[in-house]
Length: 150
Length: 85
Image (cartoon, rainbow over all chains, first blue to last red; front, side, top):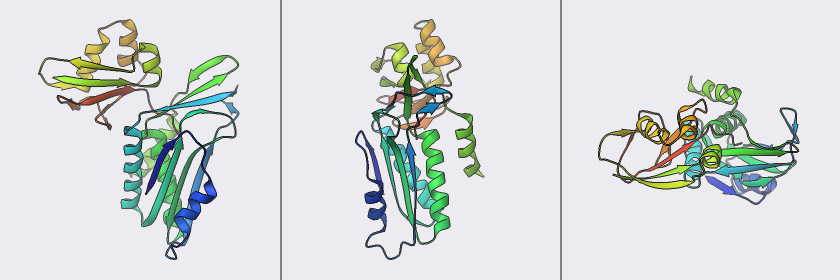
């Protein structure tokens, strides 16, 4: 398991290879990359600043990976989340999962993103021409997480 | 009992507090009780902790609900719903 919270960028190719290379039992790697958009709810974004709760963030991401591991037959997983001030086109988050077959990795990747969005202590503040504002949590993210409770 | 409290994001900014150490009487203290206690400080505290922001609480780095009990030495945190990813 790899869980990292960092200000610097990450190399998706490197991270995927890390899950795959010298692991002939791996048949699938599924990854999700989140990127900063230039438009949010009609506002043009200049920068996006991410705050987090050091200590709790890492623990919460590790719990999410452990939950995915107990639920699906996955081999390994990587979560990298950036904090600090980012700009449109910057990568924010990577969730990558390896497994023998694709179905398990697809499901586990979605599960981890849905939980990350609703349980990991990160907060986004956007800066636009009009000023700065904290983003509101979305009901749709909560709904997305709840589907895994069934 | 002594506890440490952290505030994040909008709470930290509006309350102008990122962390504080509190000494409280040794009685059963839940997250809800602590919120109500802090809310007495001013209208701003009331609005931030008991208003429509849906503040979430954590004890020792675990998300908890309002009825969770706080023990001596605990690290408590209050923050708005999370928005990462």
